[in-house]
Image 1: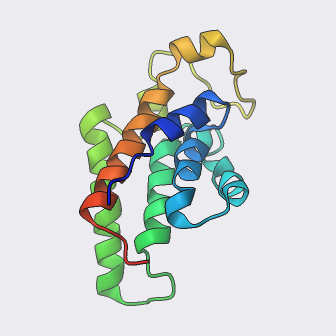
Image 2 (image 1 turned 90 degrees about the horizontal axis):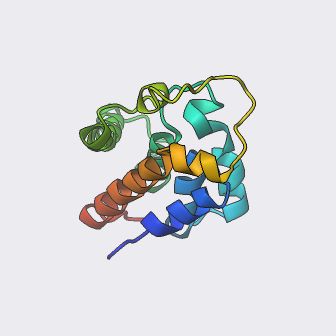
Length: 154
């Protein structure tokens, strides 16, 4: 199956959703999750987890989608858990390959970003300076490709 969530994710980000929401909500058609629930669930992961500038929200969203589609949940099988962690590390490495890191503060180095809890206003200037839409597109592209190459059984 061919997937194409890149522009939907970018559009959601341009419309005001945070980076994690943009990717996670874009894949609601695949995960089967209600878009409002997906928006709320992923809201805490924006700006590197609540603006702490840790793991990029786009990566957190990729990992959550992968968990819904491939994670075993109740399984306590060591091998199953190992395979899932390999999957997550693969997705992270694909993102790193394009951007050198998955850490928000490193991705935004040089922009003078802070980790205060107050988000920046989404203005025209914000979108001109902030490279986050590029990261949203990258995460969606990586996840689309992964889904095509590894069709989920659910």
